Length: 409
Ligand SMILES: [Zn+2]
Image (cartoon, rainbow, N blue to C red; front, side, top):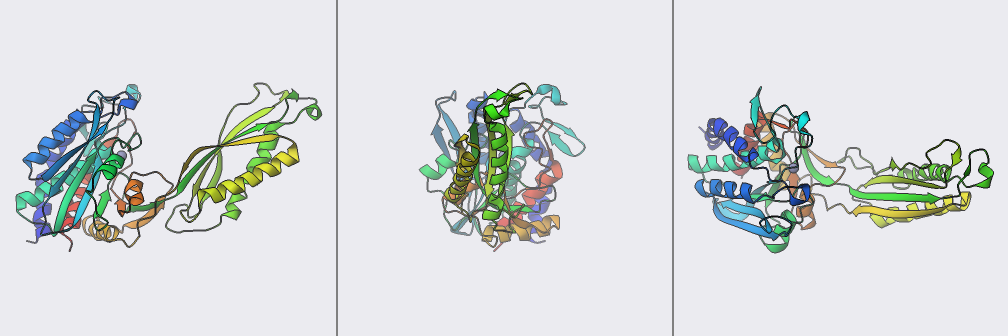
């Protein structure tokens, strides 16, 4: 029997224990204070005892100060498992916090009393992010109980504050410790697809804009006496559509493979049909390929604004609501990506595909800090929904994928 076969058999024997752990974690809802919760301290204490009882070493709790939480801090835990060689560490990072359940009437059961139905565990947090937290912990436990030493050091990072910005979670850990090295392999199993084929390695920059167009209100029958702000704004959206032509690069890593520039939210203007609106507000959501810089786009937007102002005699105020530059992508050929692809093939018989997404994953914090990280998991994407669930087979399968990565040369 190979080491992998032994580990896989051992992981299969953990099925009930893993379900049990899910149920216990679910009963410790770690909701951020800004979402009306108590934070992660109780959940962290439970996890800490698991780590201590299961052979993890160099266990460290990093406390990010947070005066809004009843304990005054938000804990993040780093814990290791020794390998033959300490030149690099293979990390799995998951987050302890969960989002609130939302409307309880939409749940078929108590979101904090996880229940099993047809091969799935239901409850808040069971997919996001407990499925892979439990998977990574039991994958490492299997090494210990089989007495198999991985080639490199293994580690888990169990962090706080993922759902509300990461500042009191991984961002704080990265800023206050030297736990990570550019040689490390970092897996963040916090997104994925149903088949387990999506390996997220890159993201687009985000630029959100607000446009307030001011003209002059008038009676609907005498538009000549006013300046129709809505009409000017409409022409502005058409002008802004040219951004697609001005920033035409395609990158097949991404879906869609282009930068996108879309008018989205529209605020109400006048309440009645027979008034020419004097003021109009709309918003735009731009997602830029990392090859483009945000200021270059802003410059073109300003040009469009000036053109419409001159043509219609309106004044247009543009406000940047959010501008987040994409982190440098993790290479599609980075060791962590290649290792995941091999493991996904072996465990799930699927071909993992490195892809870029529209923006905003926690892995960006690692990438900004110079550490290659890959986001991967096999999930139905029920995160944040009522009746969130985790396929028990995915929890075990993902544990085997991690174990496969841990065993690679
Ligand atoms: Zn998550």
